[in-house]
Amino acid sequence: MAGVFNELKWRGLIYGNTESVQESLSAGPVKIYNGFDATADSLHVGHMVPLLALARLQKFGHMPIALAGGGTSMIGDPSGRTDERLLLSREEIEANIAAIKRQLAHFLDFEIKSNPAQLLNNADWLLSLNLIDFLRDIGKHFTINYMIAKDSVRTRLEREEGLSFTEFSYMLLQSYDYLHLYDNFGVTLQTGGSDQWGNITAGAELIRRTRGKSVGALVYPLITKSDGTKFGKTASGAVWLSAERTSPYRFYQFWYNTDDRDVINYLKFFTWLDAHAVAELETAVKEKPEQREAQRRLAREMTRIVHGETALDKAEQASQVLFGGEVAGLTGAEVADIFADVPSGEIYGEKLKGDGLPLPELLVSTETVASKGEARRAIEGGGVYLNNRRVSDPTIRATLADVIDGRFLVLRIGRKNYRLVRILGNL
Image (cartoon, rainbow, N blue to C red; front, side, top):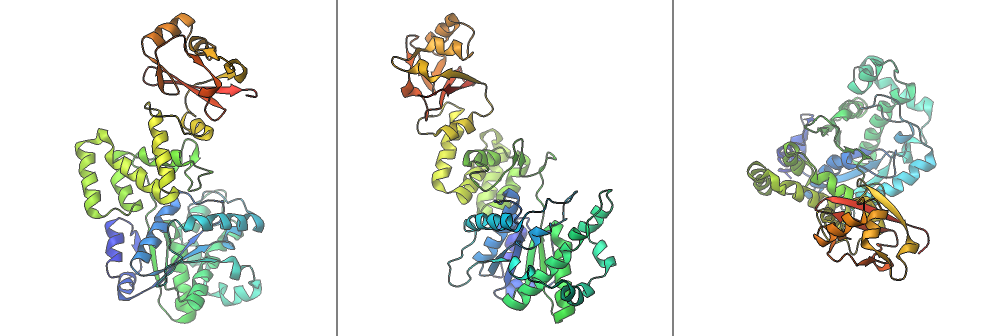
């Protein structure tokens, strides 16, 4: 247990902590909690730092609690926000929590006998609070001066939009969570992102005032990218852990496209690789950056953790398709995902029935080339591919047997000039 603080420190995961944290983590098993909001039906890659940190703490013998914010999500955390969150119904939040539960099992061990992880929902105690009692027993320990000095509140007060009383009360509710978990589950350490420092230390102060006991706070850095863009965002939006929201292929590509300046830090933050393995990959980045060995390892590790070995294999197959890899075995959805950014054409499936359609005619009708003569020359020159298989005979016909999952054909001229052909009508 003594090594877990140094493990987190080596990985660059300690942004701030109260004085007692390192000593308490070394002294014996500690009950630790980290809260997760329930404003969506999936966690995203930004949640992986605290999730994996909880998993690392569990590996060292500590007892992690993942706290779903079924109650606090009805209020909305102002931390790191420039505007107020849209408020969800209780039914929406409960559905989100049910979906998130399945994702937590990828990281935390709920079955181990010695120190199993727990999943709790703060709706179980927050939704039954009596307002007058809460204000008398909890609210009296917080001065307005203390609350507005916290970054999460102060930065919002400086904006024209201001801060609603609803959001202003969030700090009290999160502080009460810490008190409740201390009283009922023996929790003595709360963790979270650095933007949660004010809320976490407010909870520790509430326990000191009401119970006369000292508890800890530990926060992780908010991940940034060297190019100044926001981590976890792509042109199509956030990168989610749900395969329905972000496909394993897109998830793999997100990590594979990591900048050389960021990849070593990400290997430390997000993977289980040890210092020796990371050092070897750091050398590879310096000496042979064009091979992208570190990015490939990062993409493999992250896709395996979140989606499993089978999904990793499919993601790697899909990643090779744009470089001429095998298309056979991919689903229509996977093909659409891979070729989402390439030009497309359309053809009615009726034309592919029977003997099918001569390939030169297919190339012209889908505007892949300008004329049948150009198509024949390209085919005879060995530069035309149907579903990534070279075609050198201009008399070859495309038939229904070539259609992928009843939806697509993939044409290619040369090495990288792709066109996705969508099949229209009933086959």
